[in-house]
Length: 168
Image (cartoon, rainbow, N blue to C red):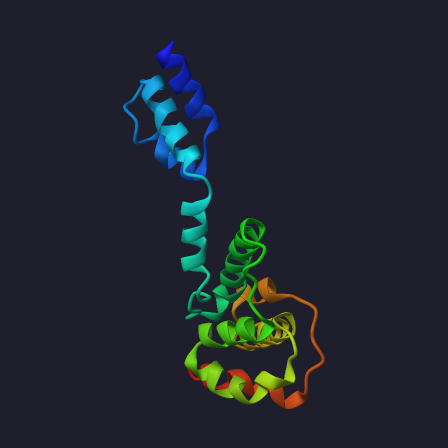
């Protein structure tokens, strides 16, 4: 019976629960079940704490080709955190500053003058993604299509944002 419980748990658990499951002795379903019960009884607090620490800042973007995936991952974790803690929302200004701080220095120093032009995080993100797409397209990177998004209304001189990166 213990072996069957172990096999069933192995088939149905995933993510963090799988990590906890693997700490139990192999083929000992009762020990694995106790481990899983302790994990479930802890509640969401460990996951909330993990997400809260991850969401303090958007991870730094060192390569424009990973901008889109970095932001998507961060926003997905942010959504999960807000489902668990609906009362802990940040302001648009906080989100805009986090996006600004995650970008390479060459991009940030230009964006500081453009920061007030975009009222929301989504507007600023769309502008940054559009500029990254243009930069990658001009410099022949095949990944430029990953940044396809609707273009915000932007002035022609905004292409200057990534000129410093063109030298690299």
